[in-house]
Length: 320
Image: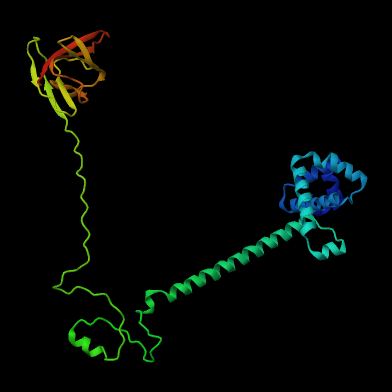
């Protein structure tokens, strides 16, 4: 069906829920088209205006209250139209008030749009004027206007701009006897020391040097009396333990202080580096972890059957 096959009265009945089922179905389909949706909107605007003005018949008023206002979206639209119409009635044109003309919500909305557009245009012109004034003032005070000239208002002789000459001869040529010169601060000559204090260089704080990493390589010992002597620095230390086992790991290591048989450090999940007969397991120790005296490092790994097996013992002595 086309848009022209339905009258405004039929559309009003459709909005009020009074249209026949076949007519409502056809209007539902047409409401999804842009042209007919705009026409429905126009009829709906007039319907809301008549309702707010109290010009609807009693049957249409009951249908409006029970059918049209049953939709929360339509109810919000009517409430907003009522509020804006009341505001337009308070601040509307004198002509509308004096003649008693009905102030439509949609007319008020159009007036608000015009007022907003006019306000934006006025604000834009004001900004352009302010910007032009700032540019004009900055042009008057800009350095491009030329060097400043000293002027004496009490003397009929105009002031003359004086430029410091590069040579004594040129200074005598350009400086007349009756010229009033502007005060120019003294500048030191090529052989004259400047009286202005020179900025003193600020002392830079020396960068704190990070303690270097000490690296020790230990080999497994067959006897507990075979100690390797090490001297630990104040920084971190790393022990590289050479492996003589064919187990792949991961490895577990623990450090025992032999004097009290106390475990002071341990780690799990260690991975060997290198290949074949040149493999090592590395232990990284924070400063202060190990004290002086005799220590033993024991390394374990699990065999193919899942049993833990000792890989080797490493003995070292920390010198004071």
